[in-house]
Length: 85
Length: 393
Image (cartoon, rainbow over all chains, first blue to last red; front, side, top):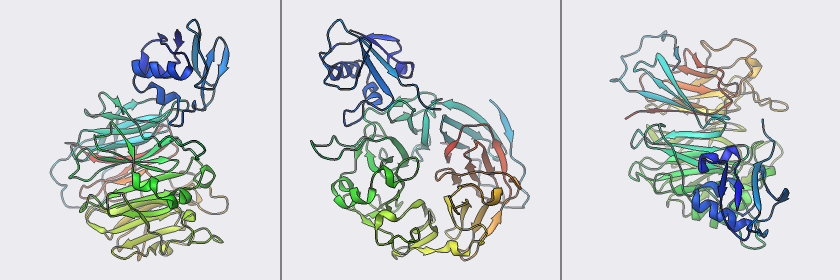
């Protein structure tokens, strides 16, 4: 499936959109980590919680759980929340 | 590259040692910069930014090779990591396994590293060993030059420490921190660290077991000093010329400890009353264990944490804390409401000793004569978190 990568993580992917696979969000992130080492820990902490300012949208719907099932046709958008200063 | 000048020293002093090239490493809320000095420390060439937009809590050069840099970084959105450069910052690689706590078992309280706060190179005999302190408080070790990090197991296994570390409500406004990781230059297994809050601690077996070292340290009035959690050391420094002597700037005063003794002496009582002995930073002389510098801040009422009366100054003791002298030559005389954070003042090993400090308002100041005269060598940087100085190979 296609994954939109936020600008803050493009130092890993060099691309705005990448291909990755998985039947859950957790598997998808594991695939991204395989392709782009280091990227997962910047998004997900060691307790498998999505970091506070990261957001993941699937088909326009925000998801927060790594166990969330995904479909092969899903578009996944990873974005950073508007925050900071 | 910009060039700035440091004013000439006003005092006659012996000629400096053979030329040494120094680099001042500046870590800020929005990136890191390197300032390369000439052999006389008169001019500085700025190089950077590195990691623009990242909060860089600490940037350290490995004194064992004079080339390798480690940077503790995160951004507002992304998780914490450690970057490593083996060519003085021309290229950087990210740690394969940055400092992170173990995954908590079901039903167990879990912790996640918010940021790596402190980096300390290991002992000279352990070339690839580094230590890191985090917020919330954790102590990590790397044995491969900063590529892979693991918790120091002895600390994690001791339930007392989880209690003393407390939670996010118990720490500093930016989160509770483990800092001041010190390796005894005579013994790689002899370690110290400090926690804000949570006291000063010592291990003699490479971190397998730890014991508190807080006797003599005061806590905020009304609290019980026998409770380790209430102790708030801001920074601890070991004297390179006498590793049995430690100095400490604490939330509640300035202290000295002479080992093998275990009782801290509050030497800040001799500071002028109108200035007090509260601050974040402390630097020690590389060759004289009687000499230490502090940079006091206003710790009254609501704790403004600015220069007292808006008049920044370093204070030096040249007799191990019996007396203190004000050093404000070249610093603003009024209306300068700085804070100098706990990693943001350091001393080089030259003769005379150079001092360097960074302010929350983004100014970098240096003195080539042990604090007698100061000059601003950079301004308009982001908020400065840490300043280190190192000799290049």
